[in-house]
Length: 488
Ligand SMILES: *Cc1c(COP(=O)(O)O)cnc(C)c1O
Image 1 (spheres, rainbow, N blue to C red):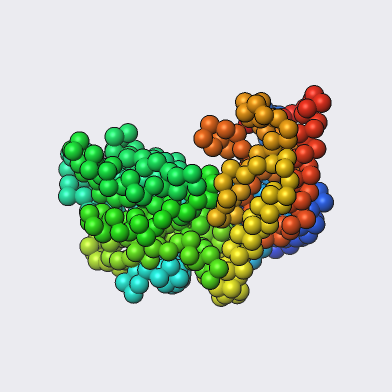
Image 2 (cartoon, protein in one colour):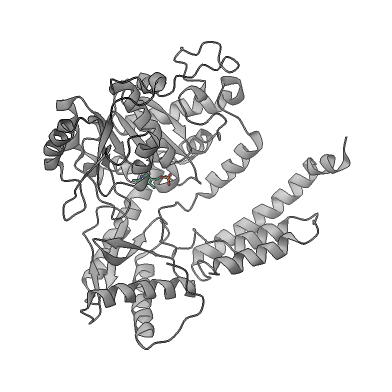
């Protein structure tokens, strides 16, 4: 055998490097969680690239640990309690360990033998979640790689089940359409375009002052679409929306879909987990009537990316999404066999992501997820209370989830000036590295956006954030120049 390959597969080296890596990560975790170091060491993209180009030019090294330590140091630290930017979970340590194991096992999933345990766990985990959402006895689903792919998958199922045209065999003949709120995640728009619906086929329903779909307008938009010859087959509800964390009225959407025999898809990538809490379940009232629901585990359920459930109220619908006959994979392409993952998932080979979720459930139980959602949504309520007590800030909208949009106003009255100032404040904050937040544009105005994703964040961290924002605003006002502002 080739000596390099023998060495690269050495179990002893794996053991030794593995221990060193775990030590490195455990030290990192302990430090990050104290909140003392920086969330990120910001560098401009070109500088970052130059660093790695120089690194790449070095001769190979037998010890990968210094390299891994550098990657760690040059990455954003999600476990830092002052990291509150995007909706990505700081993964539970156990979930990261499971990821190491699934990386080693590398079960391909598409056919049963290549994922015997993983396919069984996937069945259990999806049915468990479907029951939590009260989707009923015939519910089920599958796991796939991310909310983006999951939404496309669900809409493909909707089209296969409900659109009279057989697009799979004949291509697009009639002008199909979906209805969705203007606040929906951009991936819904993307999915619709991939499906050939075009701009005409994406009917955007305006939102109210809380950024929820104005469901009272569904009827008139539907009539107008039919008059134009469009064949509407689905309505997508957001629970919650990405920008402001607003929950659409799912019951109203369910009523409308029932009346017109349309597919009701609920995009709960971020916020469907509210169903796991007695306190917040009311936010997703009506989700149990959805034909399909998407839930990201890597957002609110503590796993590393990507793990997403596509759930169906009637599990059998999921077998109609794709109608491929791959003789070398499956003896019977028509059989509805849950254990051949590739029949219903977009992916052929896919990660054995079910093991990750299952391990968390078997170790910590449902209570872990309930505690997480209640902690994070509670933190948002705390931030709102603090903002209310500070005239320097104004809220974009009363948040329903753990996403809070607000802006610094100070004594400034000119709106454009404020847009510029808020963008500068954020850039300064991120360049400092002590906090990470993002910005968004709402109704044409620049807002700061905070996603509270780390349950170890405390109200004190939030106070510090607001203090720091005021400090940044004053520094901008006095014209201090900060180097290396991130592109915003
Ligand atoms: C994040 C999000 C998505 C996209 O999910 P990915 O897992 O990032 O692909 C879709 N819809 C909503 C509502 C989201 O919040």
